[in-house]
Length: 214
Ligand code: AMP
Image 1: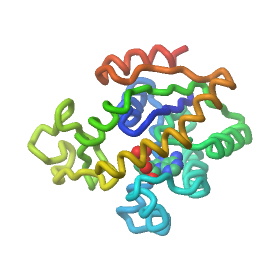
Image 2 (image 1 turned 90 degrees about the vertical axis):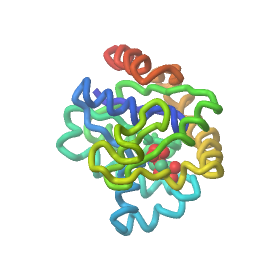
Image 3 (image 1 turned 60 degrees about the vertical axis):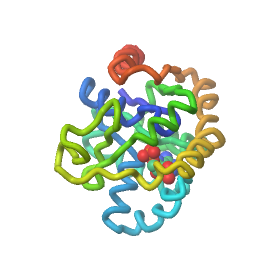
């Protein structure tokens, strides 16, 4: 089972990807997490991507396509994977299609999580993240157990640099112009499912599970 989660920043892709991983044993592939880890490590990839990410812009297609090529080749992806935050442009989707065809694999479902702009802004503004492990929290609906500290490793939580108001606006604009056209791309291939992402994580997870189980 190979699944793509589409949706604007804050739609709940990361949260729902984790649910699919737990329920169906899929590998979680998040280009955002991989890029943030590269920035933390100060690697060449991280240095190349950091400026784009901090501004709330998409990083160049070549960089993320190379990341994905390597990642979906890993053994844990053979049982199936959920792509969270990739593809984000039509050229990325085309590159993915070629990569999978060469490996005799395919995408089974593409689920677009739809949420209104106000919800997107509110969710991103309230998001806090662990700079050590990348875990995400929401100040109101999913706060950490101990004020301001990561449940997993106790690191003080921070606001992602791209969760500031100006960056949120830019990420939403990037989504509308570059990523949203992917809905038509996958609709045309008969693989798109649209899902209201404004409900609680449990409600969305239940509907998502039904969709991907076919
Ligand atoms: P995310 O955690 O998915 O919101 O991604 C955070 C940031 O990483 C995005 O705003 C982009 O700068 C970059 N990024 C993640 N995935 C991609 C992608 N598929 N294409 C281009 N940039 C990406």
